[in-house]
Length: 309
Image (cartoon, rainbow, N blue to C red; front, side):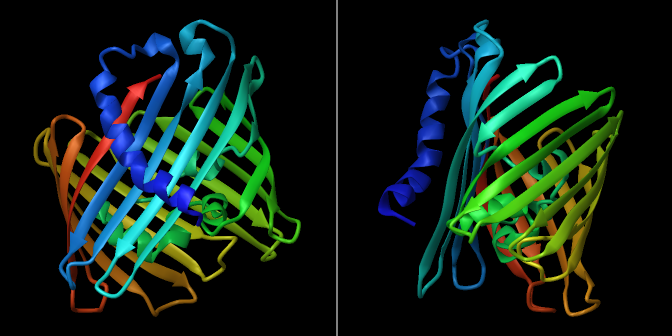
């Protein structure tokens, strides 16, 4: 990663926080928006620090009354610092989209439809868990970008009743002319959401998929997913968890992550509690049984952004 990209990655959460001061001035009618989260945590094993950033930002002309087009950008970043080393991964992408009566068409470096329509459980908010298992926590599209590839393509999104769906075809620059095909659909009915996605990466010859289901009654929630990544074919994994909201500010999650195929070799129970502060800020405490009987605990602080359209 270049020094410019690294500086952009590290500065993004600071810039996003600074923008909160202008939240009251920048009305939704401006068309500009910023959504996502930034989180940093310290773990019990050696005081290592981990952080994640996932921000969507851009301009929607329709919200400003100026047409049916827009620009959408995404910044993903992952940071770790241990007693012996530090590492940073980051990727920024952007696309131009047009809304029509047939749906939305995007060109450039659009986000993956799997990231938008299929659930990836967050392992009780653990930054460490996300980084340890990154290939199965995000789409292959996002993973390729984080490893330094440039992914250019076209994407289509549409909806019908309770269904939302999307498909994308991309060329992976620097990947030997590899191509990536993706498709995903979600169905929402009341408290229930189902999602399914498929991805085919010519570089590995593997067809990956993600199937997810979520139930949320407001107080009680449950989530499950089965993921087989295409770009990093290391097996098929499951994640199942349950959550309980004690009140509007305090919630708890208990779950388990493991490998289905090949069977055995990995079972990772986890648990966490989250306390919301200042409406969008939070403190998260989590524990992962990473070493089969020697849990690693993490205390993290973060902020959820929801500004503009």
